[in-house]
Length: 144
Image (cartoon, rainbow, N blue to C red; front, side, top):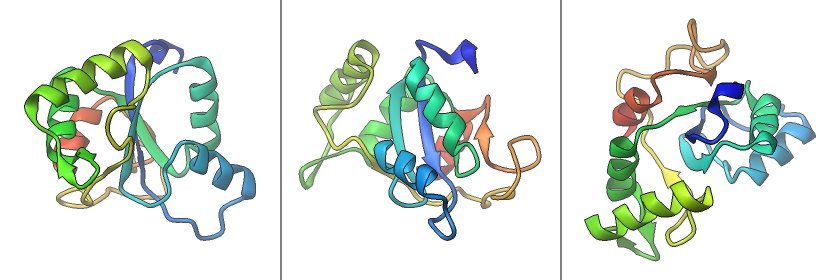
């Protein structure tokens, strides 16, 4: 996970709130992941990676490329009650790369469940859907 530091990562909540410990619930709240299938984009920092260790059994995360991020912002991004156009999407991508988080639009992207479903929401990535994954762009394309 140290190899992620300084890169853009997407975090998607996979599991619900049932029987969650208070520390994990608070960390999910700090990450703005209030419901399953919500997604946020951050630049990876040491504190953020520490938060991901706490919630690794409830979210999936990984590095995302710029093309997928721009598509995510155009398809699922909202500014007030209106959709985001192509120019604003490029500005937001630059903003995330520079500042580390989304500010000019709603920072939470509400996604659909992935086409063909989750693998298993109780096991880690190679066998299930939780934790770090190396093909995050593939998952996001299935959820848009």
